[in-house]
Image (cartoon, rainbow, N blue to C red; front, side):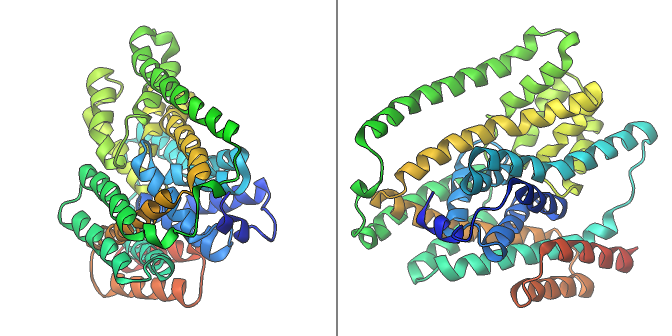
Length: 409
């Protein structure tokens, strides 16, 4: 665990039960996509609970961005691991997914039983400007500590402009890689006082870990290949196993966020296995967007259609678990190497870029909202409540949705 994290935890680690409750609340209120969920996590763990530092959060976001899988859930697993180890990672990930999982189960039952979905447009017109305010507040809080000079601000600004004007997975990947290189060139001199030999690891343990790393990677590739091919070999009797294997394999192929993943999921569940129709797939994606969790919770709907509640559970486990495990493995090695002057410099550049990327997310959320006097008022009041009065997001998001319902119904 890093020095900053230890400082944050100086007053004692929270219990697993309290962590579960914190992330259950986060999972119930984090509407608006993965950056919104990450922003709520940052608000709780860094600003309010002081369990992690801004540097820790930015490291987690940076690592999750370049690895496969749903970014928000991987960041949550990372945060839980930093606070309470493996048990903390499991508890936090389960808690943050659980509200969306239960909501999708209910919506799936309603969909296949009655065929109609309740109108939620008015509520979400209130949600979206509040979500934008949460993200902007996160940028302000992180920027105060990380964007301390014109170099740092320039990296963040370039990342913002590229995502707004170009966007896409390859742009995101290029931003991370280039920001790391620029950070290495610009900030290495600032870390000359730190030496690689300051890492408190014996040389024998270090050699052992380096030998284990390629073995772990090869094992992960083998598991991925097995998971992708298993559905072709199994019969309909083991349909839940097919769901688990299919979504586990797809989880390790997901780079660039949930929306990038939609075509791959459609090809698998609609065209290849014909588990659902094209219209049902569209409806599944829509349901994923109206829940407070990640859009990939749509897998729950597909699993429910194929094999009921058990199928929904298997599909949900499959889409989130393998990539989260990979995230934890890489987090362990990141912890061992963070004292390197080269890695420190690269991570500093990446952190600045991540702040720009988060601000770009706020821009897209704002542009997807209906801009009028009511939504503008919600945005401004939410931002004031977060920055000045330090109110919890758990109050801001529901109140904003209620205002939207009253104003637009």
